[in-house]
Image 1 (cartoon, helix red, strand yellow):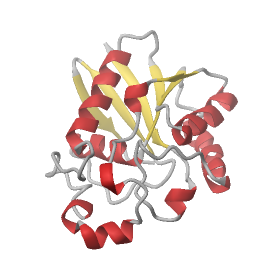
Image 2 (cartoon, helix red, strand yellow; image 1 turned 90 degrees about the vertical axis):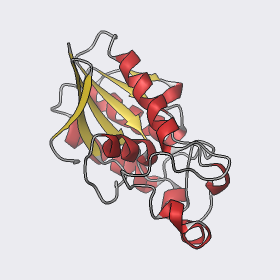
Image 3 (tube, rainbow, N blue to C red; image 1 turned 30 degrees about the vertical axis):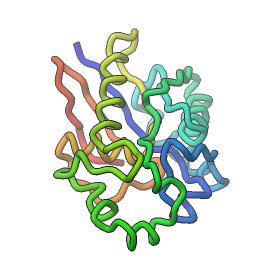
Length: 192
């Protein structure tokens, strides 16, 4: 059995624009630029054969999913376990301030060798990754061949780390093709 997922990050929010660390405890909607990014994402996904989009419950991901789904005329289903990592004390703080306070965490968050890293009071990258991957495994039993998945930069980055995919920074509305086949995950192609 093969299932194809097109995993994409939500559009920009005001906290992204302000360069603040935004996790599952910060439920901000898209700003004007974020809506435009979501509209541009349609062009990237329109020929992928999406039958449905599964989305994080957070406003920014759900809104991005709805913009895409409306044009593609497909349903959106919210799944709580697709939410962003909870970053504890880092939630809403300026990244520049966190860089000074806890550089060992900020500098290594996207490092594939640091899966147990976490901010005080928050989830580790591994805990968030396990939650999201477990949810995706559950979704493989659903009736579709190709689905979109609207998530977040932290969980998407953790997934790419897990798949040994080398990346620098995930832009808003970046996407990648994730395949589940014979009980294994693999990324196909580049982040686009």
